[in-house]
Amino acid sequence: MACIYHRLMKNLPVLSLSKTFIQIYYNFEQRDKRRIKILLILQFFSNILDVIGIFLVGIIGALSVNGIQSKAASGITLQAIDFFRISELSFQYIVAIFSIMTLVVFIFRIILSLYFTKINLKFLSLRFGLISGDLIRKILTSSRENLNEKSTQEIIYTSTFATESMILRVFSPYLVTIVDAMLLIIILFSILIYSFYLALIIIVIFGLISYLTYSRLNNYSFSLGKESTRLAIESNNEIADALDLYRELHVRGRTNWSAEKIRENRLELSKISAKSNFIPSISRYIIEATVIFGTFFVAAIQFILKDANTAIAGIAIYLAASSRIAPTALRVQQNLLQAKNNLPAATSALSLIKELGTTPIGDNRAYNSNFNHSNFIGDIEIKNMSFSYKNANKPALKNINISIKDKNTVAVIGPTGAGKSTLINLILGLQDPSSGEINIFGTKPKVTLELWPGSIGYVAQTINLINGSIKDNLTVGFAKDEISNEIIDNCIKDAKLTQFVSSLPFGIDTNIGDKGANLSGGQKQKLGIARALLTKPKILILDEATSALDAVSEQEVMETINNLNGKITMIIIAHRLSTLEKANTVVYIDNGAILHTGSFKEIINMIPEINKRAKLLIPELNEKPINEN
Image 1 (tube, rainbow, N blue to C red):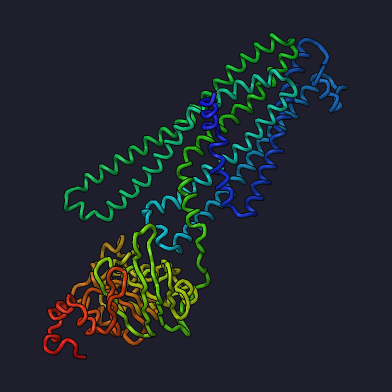
Image 2 (cartoon, rainbow, N blue to C red; image 1 turned 135 degrees about the horizontal axis):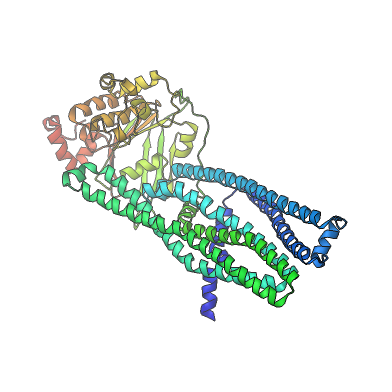
């Protein structure tokens, strides 16, 4: 008995999906919850029309038998005639009136169903767009540490398709199931009042067959959905990786192998899709067979237990009820199986929503395209700041203290993994300190960027470019006509790109290809620097910004950077010594801690490894004592 009960609870649709449905429901705003409740109430009352139509069909059946047998109406049929006060009319008129009433009721019910379905789908589709948009916005404004464990393709899949599945393929079908369940309960309760035996037969036949069908397909559908979600993310990752690494795959002669692996993955995904799409057909044919079997069974029982008049009326009511119960039961099964199939995707979306639920959405105020940054002073104070990554054994940065005055240049150096990039992420407000504080012009980095957007420029070691023109890449985040060509020309000039852009067939409107495929490494880097200078920042952060440049290009860019000395605050992450000479202060970080701070020559004197490199690369240092200023 315990085993049977456990299996029943495991396969019961309401219990297996209700938790997810409730979780999705609570992600709606309060006004949307009220609207959902109102829609359910309206659909509940519209379901009563089905019951009325079914009994009208039964009355017509009973009247037909009475007419054939030339008998007077009795029972419920007589009560209905008296209720509508048409007993004085002829038999033909009475039948015609009930037929017209039945037709009107069913047509009106269909119109209401279409109307409510349209409203419901439109409402939920709009809410999917809002939830997905809000989720993407939170992703873009959240701490990167929250998403470090997820691949880009997983984030894209979860915030778009999985969120759509959550609303339109789990919540919506389940909501329709609630409405359909109410309809079934109303129909069965009404038939129960008319005939206990007829109601019992319908419950046993449709209930048993529906449960057995669902219990067989339930776990199968869920497993298909789980595998489909895994393969979709995996396939997208493989395609993205192959496109990013196509040069390496080409020289290794592994492009065909990679393509075949993706092909096999897509084939497996298509097989699962075919299986998922076949499941509704199984339910449909089983329900159709149930209706046919039930008709003969009900007819036999009715004629055995009842007189011909009552039997015909019962059969008519059964057929009318079946015409509503069968499609409704089919919808319930298919909607529950669809919800079950998409449950893994919905679960991943709910997980991401929960993870980012407390993430504040950044200020969306209008952007000032004049880039005045009036009254902004580029002072940066870092006091007793430490930071640890989630589940890390030791802090990435510990007890960091740095004071950077306005229009000074600070170079940060240290071995790979020392914590330099983490420090930059914290200054940019992409992550929050575990302890201590960072203040830019007296405010936290995130607040600074909200109050003075564009006041901080950033140049990464690897420049991410979009498939578009030079202008598109420089004005990322702005409307097409929001930035004047004068501003664009100035930042191009500052980044030493004027000659290159002038040589292009369409100037700044020339397409550079996917991820800058038509540019050299140095050109990409200088385009990234130009993009950082577009907003005329008061603080410029360069994270190994010259590492991808050749000697000539580096010299040109360094001229631009050096020309900014004394004009804006600069933080430079660097390995090349040539980028350190003009810095007011050099900070040496290793193992998450500041080991040395001083001028360029002081740092050389403190660190033997840098001393040796400096004498090789800067011959003048060999001509005088190292500690001479």
